[in-house]
Image (cartoon, rainbow, N blue to C red; front, side):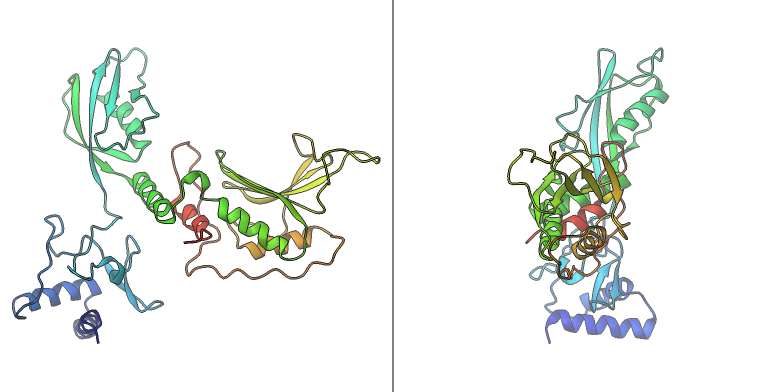
Length: 347
């Protein structure tokens, strides 16, 4: 039995005896053993987390038989450093930051030293017409709204009225910011950017449809806003020329991150826009597994060659086929949607 297995056995025994939750039992056990066990390695303690658990709240997960943080969903065995025993700070805890806001002419300009304010933005804050530029209420509303768009709330200090020409603000990550951070972590882990996080999903669906024997062509994943992708089903045209009977038609199976999968029919495959859009039968989720899209395509169309049943996609545990989409404000992302899309990226 390894040291980790032995520790878990002791914690479980204490939980059964005292009725404590895992985190409580583990902390109590560590406190008892720290003073009695000779040569026991002492965990370096962070000042903000005196129990040394990095703010995690570990609970027993019967599905995986390990302990998982109720907040960030990280597994203790994966988070704990095998050499030092240290556990990093819980990613779900609010992150602190700072900003300096300086009066620049008749506007305020925001500077964030950690780079959280995008370089593509000018940092200039809009202002209500006719309101003094040093007005405290307008400052908090306008600067606060600008910072909120990038996931920050003003945490202090208490500003005077009128506001000084330069103000150093304490910031705290809000729910939007934590969602942005989690999405960024997922992208970094998968080695892709937001612009291409959906590519693998589009290609996985197209490949599954093609695997039934349905002709598939013109596969594309585009980094629009909202992101989208598509492929054409049916016999592809040999060239872009119309035949003697008139224009060649096309049926496109399309996906958009705020809608899911749908069908676009083109009576002229070279036209800029389709004739009509229709839902695919039975598809109401945002990221249904590839085989469900394939079944819907087989139900919606009749093909010259009899297709076969699609291969069933076995996704990771906890895969969400209908994650919440991002807010339509130009700033937000949905970590839940990114997690579902990135399940198709080969690691």
